[in-house]
Amino acid sequence: MRTTASRRPCARDRDRDRGQVTIEFLGMTPTILVTLVVLWQLVLVGYTFTLAGNAADEAVRAATAAERGGAREGACQEAGLDKLSGAWAGGANVDCATGGGFVTADVRLDVPILFPGTVSFPFRVTGHAGAVEEED
Image: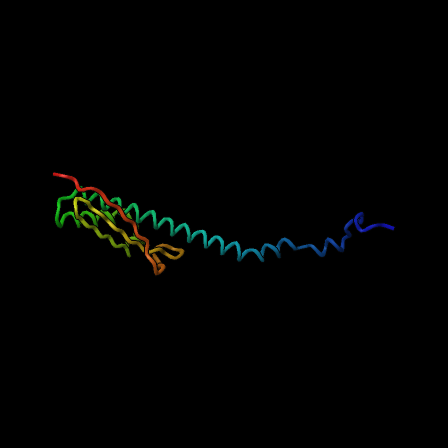
């Protein structure tokens, strides 16, 4: 009498498993796609933080080099928006302030949902930078 451990799979057993990998892959496809979408959205959030910080740095750098008064505010705003692409520049706010020998810039950007330039999340990312005023 043969035991089941030494039994070789017959053709009927192999036919029963045919297509199993395809079915498992089709079942996992939605999970894989959702994971990729979530990872892409996290990349967009991180990139928006990077853009906001860089725009604030550029804005404050331009503001410290500009003359005091209205020219400083204009230079700050222009430099803050200069390096942003159209997708992020559309809803960007650049605020510059001067006080106590210190110049600060705050840049607020919308975080896009999946595709930059389309719909955005209802929250904003803020980049902040400061520098000491240059003396004449």
